[in-house]
Length: 503
Image (tube, rainbow, N blue to C red):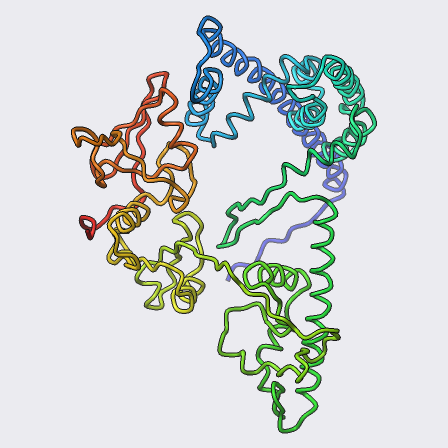
């Protein structure tokens, strides 16, 4: 048996070690220099992109100067900008809104903020710094109906804000810079805070963006006092539900035989309370938020999970209508739900048979198999669609409406799943069934049949009729779109259906 070699660390090696460490540190420093240089190059490329995009914008608008104004429909400038943003979005493989923002950002840098563009060319600031300057200075711009004095005051404020921002941008991180330029903007804005708040309230909105692992982000832009009131109410609800769950758990654990809603001597009962007690504050806030919007009230004993069978374990309210553990001055009144959520769920047949195959909401947002099974089992407002596990072909479509237009639309929604314009991911459930060849009442042109229909969101439905984009049906639901520049972009249906429509 061979003996293992002995490794000895000599004094010579020890002396050489610091030299190796120093060389490694020098190499790391050199590599970081490359990273910094790459960032400067990236800023230069972003500046060059702005120059090129704005040149394309100006050339697109140039022929319109000799054209008469349109008397109906979209203006010629609006059509030209929509054509440009849609073509740019398709070629960059980004949403049309992203392309439109790039066009507007480039215009602003070239014409309104030339000093910022120069700083990008020299690599002194990044695109994120430039975006902060664009956003804050852009908010100073007056509306189209403002008088000349207001325009002059806004221009002066924009130039002053840009100059002040560039003085601090070079040595400031993006996050700190955004906070500082926001504070600068408040000081130089020519309009009062009251007036600006009145105008800002007109932009309130709610938005949903798909996330990972069957989750989504629901965001809202609201007046600050309303947003903080919502936050405070969620905080109070979380405090109340936590107190109710703690009281119920304490009462259940004290009784040997277990009373209504309590646990028995072995601690086996009260599954709802165990789940509720395990939730974090963030989870309780999210559960209360969802319950308020969908049901109009919050049950302090709701665990926030889909488990209807554990409702029997909840402590009963007292005769006055108050939930145990909650101090209320009036009986708990149920707010009528009124509007119920209705979601298009695409469930593979193996999922309903117990296999771990994900499903989708509106054909776009993935959800886990267990959630899909619960929705199919407990939610009668969901349309159940069974698909083949390998081909994705539809095996069965729920028939809740027997009118031909409703069945035809449902078939098209299942086939397309999203708007069929290139790059658009608006769910087909929110879209229009568009005649590819326009419908003609004398029957000589476009027919109302699935071979001549495709789902288009409201924006691209009107877009198709107002701009020079053209579309053809190639059969089997395949569309070929031709841009005003003559480029072709095919789009294919999300699902290949197993047979002809069931009507």
